[in-house]
Length: 81
Image (cartoon, rainbow, N blue to C red; front, side):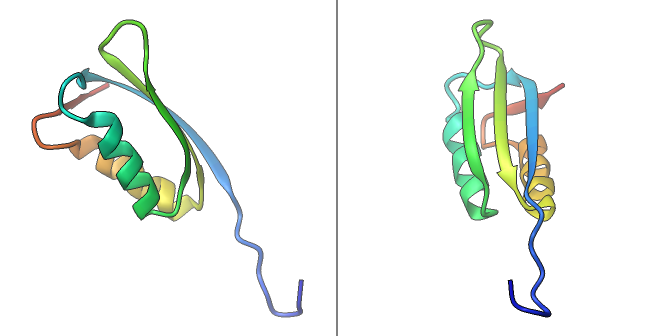
């Protein structure tokens, strides 16, 4: 690393949420949001069919933006805790 350069800290977030997530393209919404904010990871539906698990890593700012987006959700979706 050159003098004066800073290394960006990479963080990881594991988020689980429930609500109306089936049939509203919620996973696609999460992937699009994550990419928009420069994040990597995965998203999956859990066996109960009401819970989605998001495993993302990247910058603090990107993760914070993703969590904000998750609370809003896609059109037709409904976030819950």
